[in-house]
Image 1 (spheres, rainbow, N blue to C red):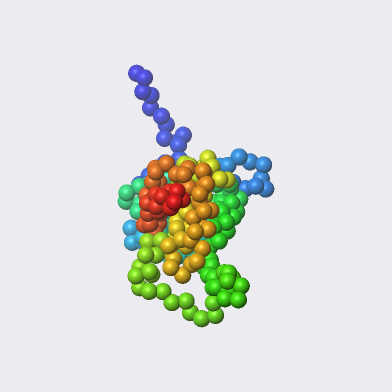
Image 2: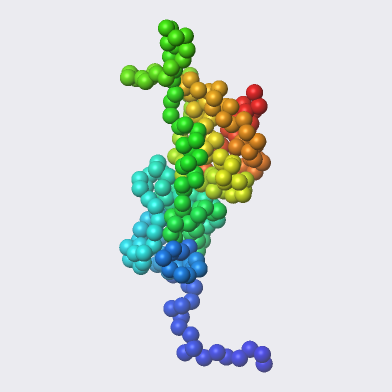
Amino acid sequence: MFLQKIEKFLFDESYYITSQFFYVRIYRWNPYLSLKPWFNIFPLKINDAKQLMVLDLLFYIKNSYDSSITFRRSCREGICGSCSMNINGVNSLACLNKFDSRNSQFLTIYPLPHMLILKDLVCDLTNFYNQYRLIKPWLIQKKVDKSKKNLINKVKTKENFQSRVDRFTLDGIYECILCACCSASCPSYWWNYDKYLGPAILLQTYKWIIDSRDHEQINRIHFLNNSIRVTKCHGISNCTKVCPKNLNPAQIINFLKYFSQI
């Protein structure tokens, strides 16, 4: 008696969520519109013959549905780190993340969490790169001036050779592409982004410290001897879980905590 028959003409079946479509939900925000952030949902036909990366889906939506969708991209090969975003709750690179419609019918795309948004999926990485500049991410070499008996900066004009063993120590570190996926997944970085350097920058710092060609190891370690720059890490290891290059920033930060106390 409580269930009454609903006439079919009241509904249009094209609006139903059916197995013939999968749905891409994209976070949108435009600073030039006086609107709160919103979501656009795009129903796409499922074609089992195609296996597309998330970046390919974004290109298709931008070209076929809404050309105003904004996102960063460049290499499409997981090298530049431009297309970092939050895909189904996990920070990743859109060009390396494959969406399988057989496992899930819904795809939700956010910008990197706890980052300032410029537009849609584009984050403001100004603070991130300012922190990268602080660690002096270049080789610093010095030579002894015999006349003055002190060290002066040395400009290399030839190839700087390195032994195979020294080169091997950089494996698992140099692959970092500064996509900011790890830093954007770190709760400590969320609340202390202006003081704590974050996993990506600390990983880069460690690379310059252990590089046998660099002569500024002591000064680099002294730079980290700060109550917040390194020690704000609480070992949650979100950074290691989300790294698209399968690196281990959490382990590197533990090494830096030890070095900074020397």
